[in-house]
Length: 400
Image (cartoon, rainbow, N blue to C red; front, side, top):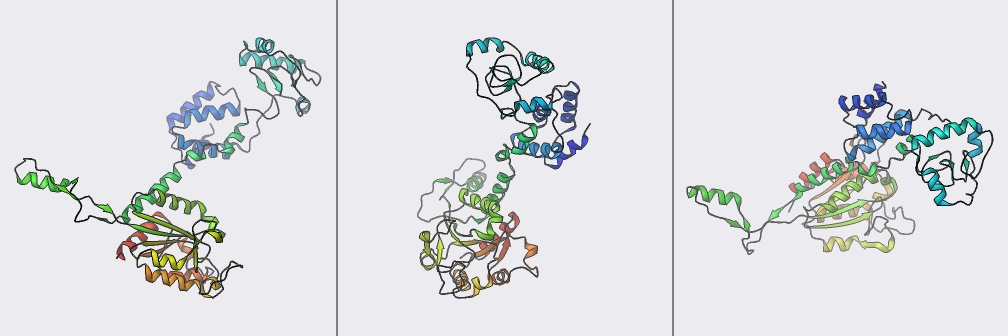
């Protein structure tokens, strides 16, 4: 029965087993969803979803499979027309209404509603008997009842397709977390551990302890060593806005991985738009009041810092090569962008460029000439986990 739904679930990344699928078929055979698509949505999700990170995958697969289906309604077209616009609720005694409907089960209410649908011949508003609006029946549009079935209008119980389409569980996906973790694993390779000769020996030297203990025929001899501290310092320059909006999510993962990394002794982050000149910026908006002089960075941030520039290198050729090539109409540049790129290259031997644009497009005939120029000036790597790993090897190779 609709086995293609099983394969679609797997296509969306769910590892649905045949045992789980057979359990779903058994539940359908017992009519546990009461031939209702909304109930089927909740039932199948309860059976097939094993972990919270699969909720969003299930919603996407469910919506893709069932979006062409129309949910059937037991209500005649004329009835729907009567219920389209709700009237204001009439005055009522809450205790009395609760006493009428509170003791009834949902199944009893459903059967009573079906009976009323057969008997009702006209539009009705208010009251405690008919299917209508603004009343106190357990079935209808608006009004009040302690329990019941909403007909038409905006209710708490929405359609199965609407719930699936909303993808309320997208934040529970583990895909992004895994990618951030992969970036963090790659960043660990940036560690440069060293110790100070004058620091006290406060950490256990495991290898030394084992070696000395073996030399003494198993008699334990503790060997201590000076603590090793991570000395890695990173200067991160990120292109913000414009064509980079297409890569915002990917760059966000890298930025989050760097920010959360415990492998860095110091991290400094600045931003630019397309190309940087006399000024960089302290926030992604690149507002003029948040500028900082590039020359100040060159003078105050030491050459021991490793530099990662992130951008698609797709600026106009004039922005890179010409005086006053700055795309910002209100601010000119006395020196071309290429001058500043080379200035950073001279100051920081360990410098790379990470490009989110797919590497196959770098040598394309239609690729920006600016990209090809920058690629000749700096080692350029794709903004992928493997690209970051290759870039880190380059940074370590050129460390001073």
